[in-house]
Image (cartoon, rainbow, N blue to C red; front, side, top):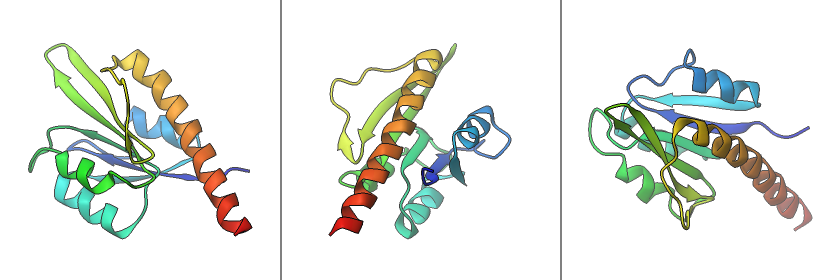
Length: 135
């Protein structure tokens, strides 16, 4: 059995009732929520998250401080950008490293990429846990 992934959902509407939250829960994720950049940074300072999903613009400021705090960590980060006719998701960090050759994803593409990111985060976490046990 895989360990539960810790996911931080950030944004004014981040809560357990969203489709995204329910989708992640069905995939064995332990979801946490923050409505502002300040709150998200506080949570990130206290605990490690495998995955963070956030709009780039938050009520109190841009989400760039999340990028700064998570760079070099083991966390995968996606930013969303709201457009006139929907939103795009931008893969930003993969296990704390800049996501190379990333392009903005439409919602359908994001669903596929997020499923892959969840599985990769789970494999990465399991592999690092096994390495820690072996040493």
